[in-house]
Image (cartoon, rainbow, N blue to C red; front, side, top):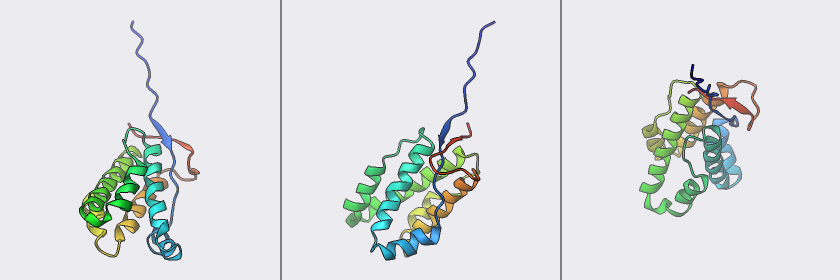
Length: 142
């Protein structure tokens, strides 16, 4: 008989649960917009650490927002891709993906509501791992 290796389920690091209204409105007002940039970098880093099968570049995503915002199209593409990454992370958490990349893109044009929307969708992932502190190893769905 041939021994077949038993593969361990993929693992990742748990993400931080954040208040969606706080990251959309409260903290950016208090920090004069700086928190929005910090948040965008952090969620990309957390998504990458949660599911390393996704090829994400937190610094690259932030640079698009910082240096290419004047093009309008580049940030919208970045928000669309972020929506796809969140949906993939929802699948990796064993959830039915509810994050719409198109909604993420279009809500950016309505008072920056994409930040609220993306954080709300990210919180669904953290809710799938109750009681897990950020950066705690968690099992992912196949």
